Image: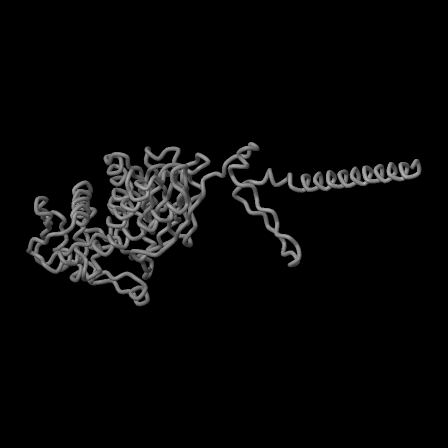
Amino acid sequence: MRKTALLLARRQHGLRKSALATLSFLLVACSRRASEKAPELNEPPHITPTVSPAPMRAPPPAPLLAERDLARVGNPKPGPDKVDVQDVAMGTNVHFVAYTNDQVDAGQVRSAIDRALREINWLAAKLSEWRNDSEVSNINLHPAHWVKVGPDTFAVIRRGLEAGRASEGAFDITFQVMSDVWKFGSAAEAEPRVPSKSEIEQRRRFVDYRKVELDAGAQAVRIPNGYQLGLGGIAKGYIVDRAADILKKAGIQAFLVQAGGDLYGAGRKPDGSPWVSGIQDPRAAEGEFFATIELTDHAFSTAGDYARSYVLGQHRYHHIIDPHTGYPATASRSVTVWAEDATTADAIDDAIFILGPKRGLELAEASPGVGVVIVDKDNKVWVSPRLAGKVHLTRQPTDGI
């Protein structure tokens, strides 16, 4: 009996020793797994780590902790996401940059941008003088008759006439009659031709914004025989404003909308800095800037003699026509207008370009909330007082014809 009891005691001691060894092994393994997992707690929740391809027999990598789990260990929530969309509309590049916020996620931002793009195309179809089915073309096809138009077309024409009065005719929406005399574009610039003085004078007789009539009650427009309307100098700014309105109504607080040379910046970027855009050097390659300008709930528009132009001899001819002479304006090389809305900026930049630095600065100062940067015909830079601290000159503009 004593021998049997001794054997049982030894067996029980061996089992206890084996159990303790197994428990020790499990504790070490758990400790190793914990030490391997710990660094993931410091990874931002919005970044997915790069994992090298593993053999098929290996288990998949463990997923990152959910945001609610990270919050429990003190990790910050991810910051606003940036949504960047580019497209083509109105014959130019259209660019949206927007940030999410606590109320609007990335999907909602993209949906709002899609609506804004549809609005851009819809308005362009109504306001283009180059489309036979537009409301503007309908006015031009029926001179001396009252033509009923939609609220957008009526609003843009009214704003255009206001800009004509403010600039004493330097901006004139009846300039379209000159389009078959001065031709600019890729085909025309391949074989450029300066029209004769008689051709110009024959058309210039039909350039006078004061002859355009509006009937607000009937929402109708009438032009005299021989006249034509062209809204290319103001419509793009109006369309940018409408696109910006859609994003604002969607709850997006920080965004940028750009269509060619017309741009609107809302709010500030997530780091608190303003939107900043470059001002094109008029005699340098596209995308080379001589200055930057800050935008917070403001728009800017640039008019330059480098777009849609050609050089013959020692003279540059371009698409910004002075209504008083019928020839391309010569007082400026480029004008960038800063304003509270893109419609104002788009309308007034051509007027200031035509007027030149002295009278152009006077017009800017007389317009509430408007500032301007002018590169004159002699390559001198003029900056209006309202833009002090908002415009930063990085270098002198390039000289040349």
